[in-house]
Image (cartoon, rainbow, N blue to C red):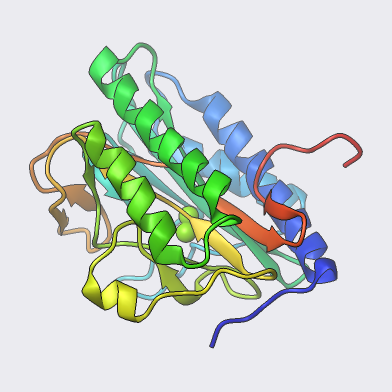
Length: 259
Ligand code: MG
Ligand code: MG
């Protein structure tokens, strides 16, 4: 069942989203050659602690429970990378994805950062993936159904020669980090049948995942890390967005004037 949130609830969710933004800012500032993915995770966890926010990725059930507050996914890793001793190197890209709960409400966001100088081809992958998220946010308040948004962003991504990852989707956010329904970044017949009507009060984690090569993915033996099967780089950007009567609001973006 799809929950609609009141203005008051969206204000509370914004508070959680701001903590996620702060954590990702701090994590992004820590990205440089030589830093380990575990050190990035520690930065995120510290920000959550400072705000008395609950890290929501830790302990997510699976074959093994997810062990960290953050998914840190390097290069061909699409999402769900486990932080550890791996050191980032000049030319890598790293997706940092995290979520927390504050006073009962959740926020979820991800950003892909370059490590030092990266190749122009990979920078373009980051640019197009971020632009696809921006496009989704721009049109989500103007379309009737989610499939229309998915159609436009997937067409945009493919027009640059990249592939939309189909094995994972955006999702509702509320009291839980992952709520119904799913918001895929592409369209097929089945998705159109289960389409979501866009309306005021929906809160959506929009998160395009884009592969420089082919769309296929596989899971590594660590049971979590999802990688592009062809080993080529993959990018991921995510914001939690609330649909309000005044248009979409970014719940996980930087503070606005007066906040
Ligand atoms: Mg996320
Ligand atoms: Mg998400």
